[in-house]
Length: 146
Length: 331
Image (cartoon, chains in turn yellow, orange):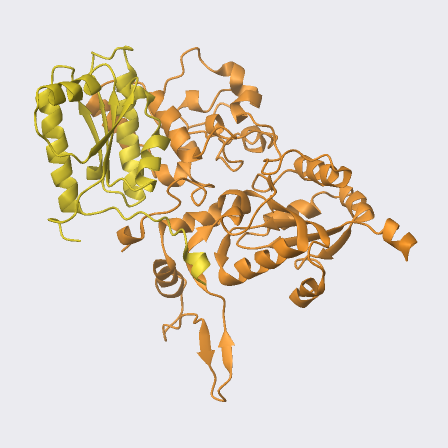
């Protein structure tokens, strides 16, 4: 698939207090941006279990975004620091499993940053378009072909 | 005839696939208890100890074996063929040990594929002496036209339940004797838990760990140490000493064999029922206790965690959500 025709599937876990509201602002302000992000609203970026990220890749996501409040602004004091620590460690583990670090992104987007959300979506979509599809299959059917 | 039927003992089969033999040893380790087992059942198939052949199993009626204990992961077509045969002949299948339950140590092969594994094993290890570069072939035709065949070696290692339907799981590398005896007695007495159960308590190792009381009120890790780098305090929680211990994400029931030996838990019992992916769940808990909020400091600390995927999925890579390294990423 060439990079012109490939339309990446992206999953975004957005915290309800900052990033989801920021995405909502981008919408109400009628900003146009790449439509590739499937948004899942969570209470806090610290709620995003690494299992959710793995499942998203398994189910066909080409890229996964976690987005939360800026450091120091978390509604629950330090949930976003947990997200930051998990993101860095999970990125390292995903690379060992052959999933490039570009496919798993963490961004801070406040409720006022509709324009930043627009930029993140556009950039992330373009970056994954260049990288190509993930094509995860986990070697799932090899033993059935025998 | 009828009288004989009524006294006929239930039939049991044991089989091994991709494993080290430790699970076979765990049956022998039942010691004098094995006499109780032999008294109560007929062992009809056990390649490691008894001389029955595949054709003997094929000749048995479907469903005529009460229970088959299968250890080892599935890596070869031959193993798949044998477990599919045993599934037909056995009323119950028990995945015996970490490898058949989760993929186990052979499951770490899922960081590679057939080509890279063969290249390493038959060409590049320092001990390889193979001047002609001979590699096992699935089919070899001899001069007289006869064909010799070898099983197919898969790119991916599978857990037993990814290949056949499994009724129960006996966790552990290898499963401890009390869990094996409990399982056998439960089967003989018909007191079995719901299908699909792991035959070990559904709580984490930390719940049972003797060192639990030594845990500080707020658990944090300021640095990561590997077991050989420090003198390990035999009373204190490993995580509190900076050593990665899989206890929080691992099911209990092992008798804390490693902890008693002053070594951290490596996760051979797999996760509890509430968790899909042991490695991801452990990663989550470990990241939460890294003692810094600063981005650069976090990255430095993460850098000191050597081989996170191999450590967190040491026994469970094939059963994890992603199952293996992406084939496209293997050079």
